[in-house]
Every structure is written in structure tokens, then in C-alpha cells.
Image 1 (cartoon, helix red, strand yellow):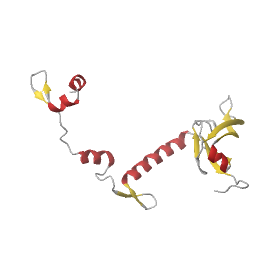
Image 2 (cartoon, one colour; image 1 turned 180 degrees about the vertical axis):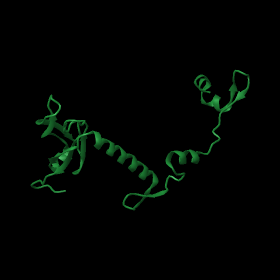
Image 3 (cartoon, one colour; image 1 turned 180 degrees about the horizontal axis):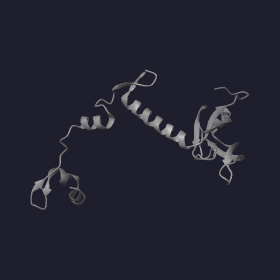
Image 4 (tube, helix red, strand yellow; image 1 turned 90 degrees about the vertical axis):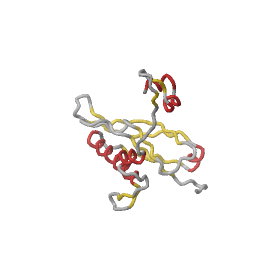
Length: 169
């Protein structure tokens, strides 16, 4: 089938062709698409209701996505250092026009002996794009703490708004 598709295209495959035995054969999906959906998602209804951990009703697909995300987070906690969280303060004008901000922070690193942790100063430049909002979170993979026996964590920057003398939102 794949050879016929590659050689003659989709229409020929659907309508039929002469195979090596001289027979005309074609392809048509005869299954139930809802059955395929149910096997993949666990329900044939994409709008099915499930309960989350707090007992609230959510769509089944949202629950599946949430569970997958939780599994990934749990696995990451076992192998990586905790996220290093810092804040960046911007004025309303910087949110409006955008700006480049230099952040200075300290992170833990492991010395060459593989056991001793020390602290190093890091300077990071980030771009605040026009239209960003207070509360925006930027994640930089592998730029956080790097303690012994753990993979390097992420740097998580939360953008906050400082009060401006005359301009208010």
C-alpha cells in the first residue's frame, strides 16, 4: 500500500489500482472513528465531565492533560534542583514600550569536588516585550541552582509592576 501511495498518490489508492496479482484494490477506513478516539482519550465524548483533585467538574481532556503535566513535574522534582525564583520590576512605560532589563542574582553551584556548594553571581539580560503584563512568568531552562547530585534547575523570573509617579493603569 505504501509503495502504491508513494508512486500513484492518494486518489489512486482510494479508487483502486492494479497490484502485482492484477487485482484492483483500494483503501477505505471501515472502523469507527469514535472508537479510535475512545481508545486514545479514554472516552468517546470529548466534552465528557471528570472530577479533578478538588472535586470540581472539568472536561475529561483537561483532566488527562493535567495528570500528564503532574507526572512530568513529579519526575522533574526527583531529578532536578528546585526552580530559582526571582522577580523583575518594570514601570508601566516599560510594559508599554518594551525594554531590556539586566538582572543580577546569586545561584548555588557545585565545586569541582562534586560535593561542596558555593554561590556565584550571575547577570542575565531579559527582554520585556511591549504589551507584557504584570505577573508574566519567564522560564529559563538550566539557568538556576546546580547543587550536588541533582541536575541544574530552572530560573523562573516573574515580572512585576512598580508604581509610576503620574501614570496609572
